[in-house]
Image 1 (tube, one colour):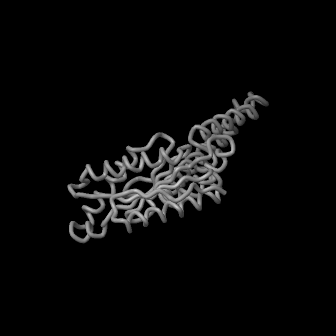
Image 2 (spheres, helix red, strand yellow):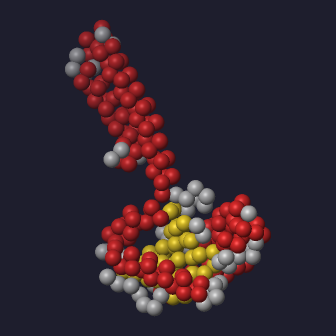
Image 3 (cartoon, one colour):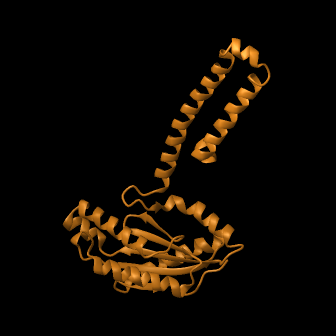
Length: 233
């Protein structure tokens, strides 16, 4: 594991100050007269420490940037599919002491290929970005919106029962239909599912929401479909 994953910037500064103070203590504190006559005994290790910190800071910044890029979609800024694993683990852990319900909404832009084919990919990208903003605007702090790939999104609603999830999903559908992102009339289809916050149930709920989404597509699009039953481990 890299330093960037272990310590934040504040932690690194605190450790730097502690290490420098320790160097002063074992030199000046032990024999201040000797350090007065040979200041290089203190200057050299402090300079070495400074060089190590400078190099480490660059590596940390690069590491944080690459880790951030790995879990974020560069177009919309949303989290991507790679970020789901750690999130599922965290939800399962917190589910032991808090509300275990985790709502899931799978959303897909209807006829998105047609937009790309007739209006161009620049317009398609603008539609994706605006819809991502709309979806994020429909959720609370603590909820999360993911771009799963292409024109498909996942919304996680921890601690939200089925009724609350369907309310959020319908609001999303209505706001996208009214927005005309990038000047294009767009609709979305949605599948809704709820699971216990345990890893197996979360995976099943994701599959269940996906099945419900494609059922919405088959029923004519621009609608939401709720999974047949809540998913439990």
